[in-house]
Image 1: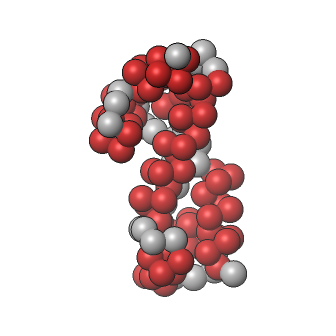
Image 2: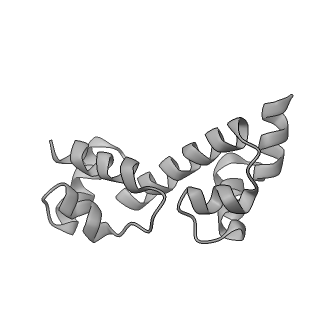
Amino acid sequence: MHVQEMTRFIHQNYDQKITLEEIASAGAVCRSRCCTLFNKYVGQTPNNYVTQYRLQKSCEMLKETQRSLSEIALACGFQSASYFSSIFRKQMGVVPQHYRKQAEE
């Protein structure tokens, strides 16, 4: 199924810049079909899915490694540590440093 190929592509490339074009082409569909399929089967846009997956990976790294926030941000495909922190705070309700502290307790 197209959505599986597209999500697999995201999972394999989340650490790099990913365009909607690339996601769609991984599923052999056009961009609008890609968005339609994601909304129908995943319940969110492809870009939101990428962000959620990157945040999930960053949470794992915050818990399991002592890497710096900058390293984690870049390893998870965010352009900068400040952008990563602001997205993280919006989605998770705490800044990455606090998340790591809570995970250690």
